[in-house]
Length: 546
Image 1: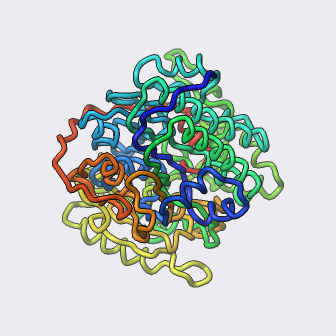
Image 2: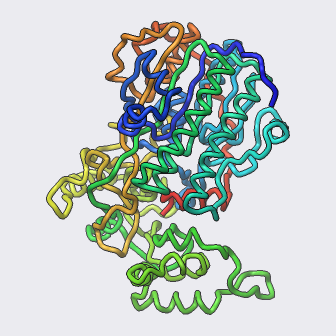
Image 3: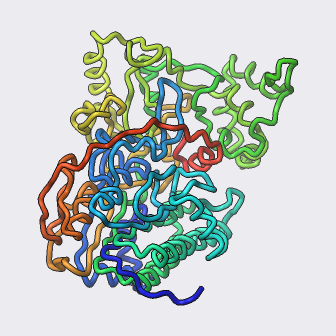
């Protein structure tokens, strides 16, 4: 690619998914990240407290809107309609984004790889969506993805699912390079006032290769190289680095909330059906989706012999969880996972019977329990008159749970109103469950006992990171109490613009305060379905869907 003239970019925001000081500090000390380190050393930095829940699909919208999930409406990877679910997308984010607010004031933006931004809305600039988008996403403006590929070659949202080991890590490095090259191309073309580029693989590498310092270093070095090139080519006046949450080792237990609630009489279960299966490794990594069984005269698929056999076994207690446990002990679980179809597994999987349960955890990422309330859920069984009593009972039972070694499972178990505020609080779990020190791994599984080892030895922590340097930044300012919601007000302040009056965050003390004003209300369009099996499978690969 030809050399490009430097842009007139005023502020650059670099998003490091799962970035945190415990990960960055050793890499800084070894000299592996010179470009990131220069931002941290030339300006000011500190821990950035995330939100509840501290997971990508909810936390990034909170970061780029400045409001809590009760105001923007996204609480996890999944959006629920009764007992049905779909993966969230941009139409579920019901608040104006940072780049839309800048557009309101006449500033342009380039946004690359930011999660939950597909399908994009119009604004002055360009946007290439990130996580939860399909592999060939709609971009803004139309045709920009083809332009990028013509300019830099291959551009992908995700690594190929069949990549393994070192090949997968090399893909993570290539994806990081694609982000940087795409961002620099768009910045040169649009000369934006604001730039926002996010790197997802700094999170993914921990889920795929927990505890592998060499692979983590390899990914971070690739990201650092791109950050250096972006800074060199774009020459932004101000640089902000921020993450959505932290990352670390889980030394506690896996607590299976629905199994606990079943013992307490809240959850009912069933075998088979179209619910959310608990043997996720097999149900989501299989390679033969929809290819089993025959089709009858009406076009409907008939269950295969394997499905019928597993379903019969389930009726006498031979569930897929028990089969999985047995296979795992002899090292065959992964082999079978690649060959057994999803429909066959669902026929033999014990699941939560949502319509007949009084309360349940529907998605572990939400960090909470939903009451099956009459008048709200399609088949609610809890009358409104007993709603608060059920919540009291749930809070009482869950607050008292201890791990097998006598430690509390939860730091807090509270009503959702104590955590969230805004027009979408009703879409949150009725009772919010915050794991102790984010060291206890929550699961929706049933049928495997209440406790076990964490399904993922590394996972999300509450404390991320933020750093600011450049024009208008007080390098001596303390950032000890920085919060995720503060990022958008702070970016606006670097433009001399006020925060929105709906925002929950404030301007960080490193940048001059600019007051608040009422921005135009969000004119919500209809939500559209993601309905993308490949996106769902990728989320399951990382343990986000059970």
